[in-house]
Length: 185
Image 1: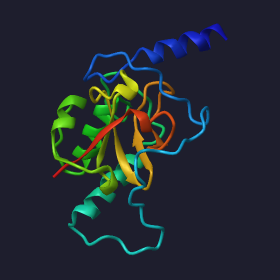
Image 2: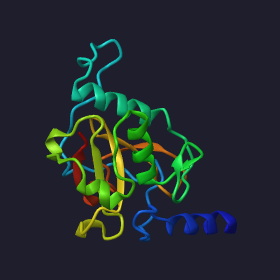
Image 3: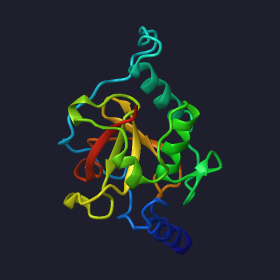
């Protein structure tokens, strides 16, 4: 039990390599109920068998990016990581976009300044979603990043449970920490 507690405390003190900050602990999946979100519902990923977006469109690129991100679920968290042996949050984004031929900066703060600002009501698969995990509801800066997969979900590399996973934007943890979204060219 002591070893588990120490491991939890150690992981809670990690942050994206890009900020060097110490985030508040991320929730463990299933440990807190979802709450009604101030983040609007977003576009959903097409159902199996639904027609794909036109080839070469921004939408198809977003679906390719979110699909690549989803294939990496379960990859371990590694502070400073940017390959499938382990990712931090911005390294995960950097790697997924690179695999799809899109250059994005390496750090959370640089990613937050790149691309075009996106209204939360216009989120699409492949958009970057940003959170302030340090200051919480104060929303002072972007300290964590994930990739929208459509609907109310995003995929990211959080530090607490140590693996890439999908979570809900509208959860009671993520909704109050949401600081913005960006669409890469």
